[in-house]
Image (cartoon, rainbow, N blue to C red; front, side, top):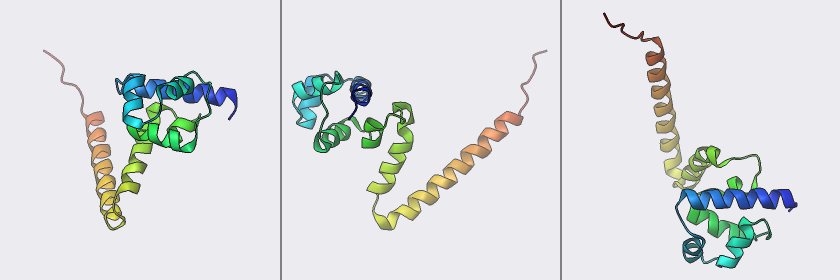
Length: 124
């Protein structure tokens, strides 16, 4: 992995860890990855294996794609969480999840449009 990508990975991991309000030691305890490895990853000094990344991503509740893809920001993590919800759902329940998600999105869009058309009441 190029050094710029290692630095980006380290920054994302540090930010995700701090967002979860975890110390390196706490992340280590939960992920079973050594503190030294976590520190080296965060400093961009280590190219971690898939297994290490998977363990860290699981504890941090972020996707591997978010960690390793420089084009995906932590702010875009909602998209990845939706993917993870869908893929972790039992196959026979996925259609139900998708249908309800689509209906909720439609209702939210309609509600948003209603609020845009309501004119503010002027005070007399």
